Length: 224
Length: 224
Image 1: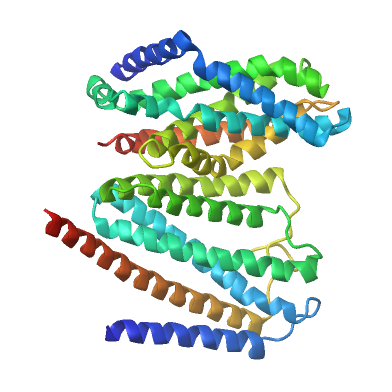
Image 2: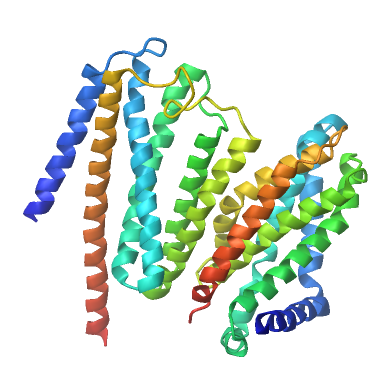
């Protein structure tokens, strides 16, 4: 049970830190907005095309934004030299990861929910018909991004050129998330929407596999 | 030293014999013609590459578990050799595909996952070059190697199920697949030859890495 209470305390800390400044959220929202607008300049889509390509672009924007947003996750602890005290404070270091990845998932989801109406308006795609399923896909996809991203940001924080390194490590690893969530989103936003349960299940399995890997190997990522 | 020379000569002889068999013994394929002969090297290097990456994964796991720098050397040697073999695959593939399919590249599951695999191991080597401290480099790259390796089947299936345009596999495929008996012999001989060659390269690279490690240790001692 100490894992849960530790995680809850640390999650509180992560959320407090962020909501004091809201730096990450503001920059990520603006970043996604910029990318979405630039995409529409680059391809100038008709409404049929945007149904087909829009979801892919949305997910690509989310992935890029996440690879920037996850940067400070462990870096902040390192520059403030708080990582070792964090480690001493918890029984199981997995709590640190769990708190950070839940916080990151929440931040990502929040930016996505803020972006979704703008995306719908810019690309002329109605999102309401299957909104709940769309939110489910966003949740599972963002969870996958955060799990893998939190693990890798612990790695990249300890290397040189970390700002460039994290996207390089993370983006190829997230290929399955991008492929599946983009495809599932396309069929949700289609004129005749279909819920692809197989894809949703796949995303859940991706999340589960990387969570397990993080649970098994997380300890080693934080070794001093 | 003698052992290494014998091993090297043996590997070379096998590769030459394999090439001879592919060019002069194997019958010409009915529809594709001579270009099909590239298949012996292409699939040979692909299989050898996959197996080398598997050894890399085992080396990474063993390093995390035992913390013996030997396993780190094994990991980096395998990653480099695997990368070379995968590069051969990615170059010979399009050479074959262009005359046969009429295109250089298609985003099929095997091609795409090989490419993502290649990218992941490029990132692995890049990560290694960006961490100075030897122990930390070994541990963090081993962990990244583990994450990367578990990602590969996920990449493969996500693309196979959601992005298909998929030529039926020649082996273990349905009816109508399969090889002429002589082709089969030449093929498996080439697979064997590529494995021996890959093992030789890994062994050489491993010796080099061990020597490098020793030099680093001696330098440390000299400085201290």
